[in-house]
View: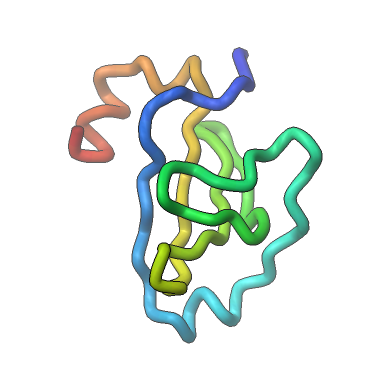
Amino acid sequence: MDRRPHTREPYPYRAGIGYLARMTATPLTPDDPVRLGEYRLAGRLGEGGQGVVYLAHTPGGEPVAVKLLFRERGDSGLLRREVGR
């Protein structure tokens, strides 16, 4: 499986501030980007078969979860339909 990050725009998930504040993020690894588009990454929330989920902040400081898809999975037509693109 190709574990390199996908090159498309990240998919932000805007949850309530309280929900994301209760989640435990681990530190970014040396291989992680510090920004994805307009989002400043603050830590890792998890990693699965599709990609890595980061705790990030909007330019206004709002916390969001951003999923960066792995390259192999991101080329799937099914995945594009799942994320609404």
